[in-house]
Every structure is written in C-alpha cells, then in structure tokens.
Amino acid sequence: VAEPNWLDDREQRVWRSFYAMRRVLDRAIDRQLVEAGLSSADYDLLVPLSEAPAHELRARDLGKRVGWDRSRLSHQLRRMEQRGQIRRHDCEDDARGTMIALTGEGLRAVKAAAPGHVDVVRRYFVDLLSPAECELLTALAAKVLAAADITLD
Amino acid sequence: VAEPNWLDDREQRVWRSFYAMRRVLDRAIDRQLVEAGLSSADYDLLVPLSEAPAHELRARDLGKRVGWDRSRLSHQLRRMEQRGQIRRHDCEDDARGTMIALTGEGLRAVKAAAPGHVDVVRRYFVDLLSPAECELLTALAAKVLAAADITLD
DNA sequence: TAAGATTGATAGTTCAATCTTG
DNA sequence: CAAGATTGAACTATCAATCTTA
View 1 (cartoon, each protein chain N blue to C red):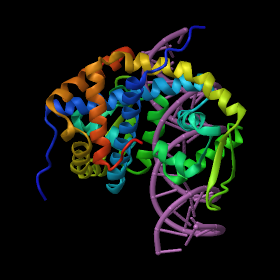
View 2: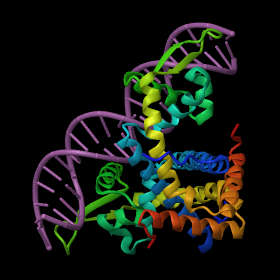
View 3: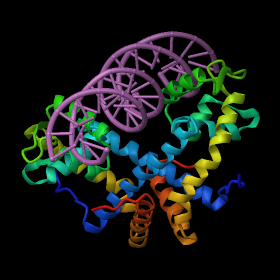
C-alpha cells in the first residue's frame, strides 16, 4: 500500500478549475436548450441524426458517435420517440438492428435550437480561447481520450 | 435575425474534443468512486466537509463551495443522511440555517475513496499536462468562470 | 457464444412551489 | 420582501437482467 501521490497546489488548482468550468458550461448549455424545448441528451442525439444521410442512423452507430452505452441510448430514444422527435424501424440488413430516423418535428427542433446553442458555446468557451489555447486543448483532449482507449472518428 | 455565427473546423474540433474529454473523465471518476461505494455527488460534498473545521459546514456555505443550488443540495443531503454519511442539526446563529456535519462513517468513506480518486484524476488528466499546459488551462477556466460571473474562493 | 437492443430498479438533477425566519 | 431550506414531480443516467438474432 504505497503512500497516495496527492496533488500539489498547482495540480489541485488546475483540476478544481477544470471541474468548475465543466459544471458552468453544462449549466449554460442546459439552460439555453431547455428554452428551446430540448434536453442536452436530446440535442446530443439530434445533431448526428441531422447530419446523417437520409436523416437516419442505426442505433449501434449512433451510440458509437456519442459514446453512449446501449441502455442509456435505448431509454433516451424511447423518450424521444414518445415526444415525436425520432421514429424507430427495423434494420433491413440485420434483424438484430434498429434504425433511428429523425422526424420532421425532430429536425425542426434541432434546427431551431442550433443557433442559440452555438451562441452559448461561443460565449462561454470558444470565443474565450486564444489560438494557442485552442491547439493545446485539442491536443490535451486527444491525450485524455487515448488514455481511455478512445479515438474520435 | 442575424445569420448564425457557426463554428469553423478548428473551433468545432476543439469543442467536440472538449465535450468528449469531459464525458470520459466523468465516466472514469464515477467508476472508481462506485467501487469505493460513493457517487460523484457524495464525493463532491464529502471533500469540503472533511476539510472544514470540526468537519462541519452550514448548508448555504457548502452549496457555495460546490456551486449547487439549494434544491439539489437538499435532495443530496437527504440521501446522504439516510446512508449515515452526514448528520443535520440546527444552526445556532441563524434559525433559518442548517449545519451539515460529517459522521465517522462519512469521514471513513471519503478517506478510503480519496487515494483511488487521485489516481484516476492523475492518470486521465493531471499527469497528461505539462506545467505550461497547466497554467494555460487554469487561466482559461478562470475566463470561463468569469464569463458566468463566478469566482473560485 | 457474442452482438444488438430493451426493460426495471435505483440514484441523481432540475424546476416550481412551499415554508420559515431575518 | 429576501434568504435559507425543503419537497414533489418529471427527467436523465447507470447497472443488472433479459430477449432475440448472427
């Protein structure tokens, strides 16, 4: 049982700052989306669907895009189907699969929410980044994702 | 109605990277804490309590430390009291207030969880940062918090 | 057996409403 | 009236168990 390798002051400061920043960003984003009638979870799924060919994706692939497990995805899709944002139908290639299609209502909702969402992302994050900070943060994120064996696309 | 100021490729990359990184960190932290029998919410509150004089804080002050609203705090404290991690008693100075005191069980739990928690924070975040990156990120977080009218301490 | 997906139970988060005290 | 705190309802996230098909 080795002595724990506690964080020094500088390390503790950056970690607590980062943790607080994350929370502030989440709140700001959630508030804007709620005004637009969506949850963050809704938006996370609506965006890849709106960018997909024919506005539809297999549930498995959608889950991989957003990094969610099957259970979370299934529960969220059930709620979104009840709200009329998406529609499920069987996958033709693979009888185990489910296709998720954006409805007109879902597309309308994400298009309506997107400009305000970008405003918040800019105001509380992107516009505060210098080019150097931008590069640094992208590189850091790649390292963090690699440490967890994850790659984006 | 001005044309939305969409993110360019570089901006979109840093935002999506950051968003994914945040999720990976959350998951890693949650998993470790669950092994230690705590939720992230438990840990967020147990740490400031364990650092406070006499291991107790007024609910109002605890809420300010972690940046939570009263409702979230109250619900979480109710669950933690049921689990025997904290105990509430009346505030002597101000009859509106509630004092939150760590129990022996709560203190034991946070002390047991802390070394593993630091390991995860190091492995997936702090140890990936150079000193220069550390400074830059701390400064960025301060800007984000300032944009939301928040200061740490 | 493994992959894709769903479901139920439980815990955590948010908003609105309420209650008490300064 | 404002500040501190609690509660109920609705929503979201996670784990374990289950079901179907490759």
